[in-house]
Length: 477
Image (cartoon, rainbow, N blue to C red; front, side):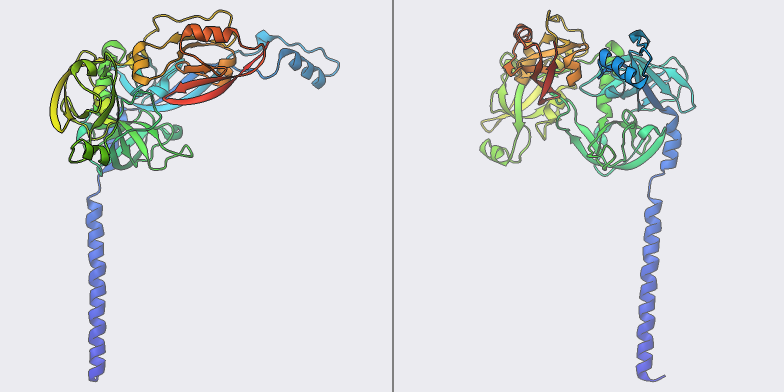
């Protein structure tokens, strides 16, 4: 072998050694990385017995699209020579609509958490346990602002999940969800925490939620199921997704466990949840406001307006104050403030740190009562319209609701058969205009309703979950 051949051989051997070394290094790295992955199998096995599948049934009144006379004529044409025997009493007046969701046991004596939207309005609720037993469930309490519900089944010695501290979650942590996506019971899906403190636009007029965002594959039917950390503790309750198709796009939102524990304690105690009220209209602190008011970094809630005679006004908080801390909670974004305020009950004394004229001040505020506290109660007085053909009755908005939201109108308190239901109105919708006339009171609504035309279409403007929309009511003689 000449010198040139020896050099070529040496170079080739060195290259092969380098390739083998690199390949072995990648293999060892992959093996080490795989060894660090969490053991989801153990996590599922330990917690699956506490997960439940929830099925509900609602009795829905059918909306006939064919008048009786036209139906009789149609039967004559289909059966010539026979007189149709049409007995309205034989036609089913109600139909059943089913829905499914998820939940989990939180105590050995049968208390269960799920989402409010899974069970609200249901006539029957059945809970399917992991061991295939099925129980009828009793609703202990519902809370629309947090989208949580507390159920109870008549059973004992049940496995149950334990709550963890959602405040300790960090972005990037592994989490696991177990539920019933699309009715596929006790399915597990894993992912990571994508973000904390998310506010989902359009959910509600009152933003009392700060969601955990994950990339876990949450789908329809997962609602109400638990979100576990690697210690096997529940750190969230799966609530909703962002999707253009109805399926998982890798963006899901869970209710923090610390919020759920507070809500559950109140529902179990009294069947309702009470939240505090500060009484300010606020917005984000951007770079410009931070510079103008002497704040090093943009954070906090800028007070646009203090509501008259509100707890904030009574405590000495002023317009253009910047609220930086509430009762020990740091306010990074203005959406943090209502979330933390909502964790305390009316009458609670809270310390508020504000920035005013480049000076840090502390104020003590006694929280008022949020308008949402009346949601679970029967309205004090329902104004019953006599003679209107719209099929619903309304109640006045409270003065507190008008102050907080800036809305004048009336709320639908009772919905029967008629143009309102056919148009898609719901109990709780706030009516701000009827037939293009502004509505500010129940008396004004009654006057407008009683002077509507005999037939044709009229417009109705409503506010639902903080969003305004206009619908058409069809009137008939």
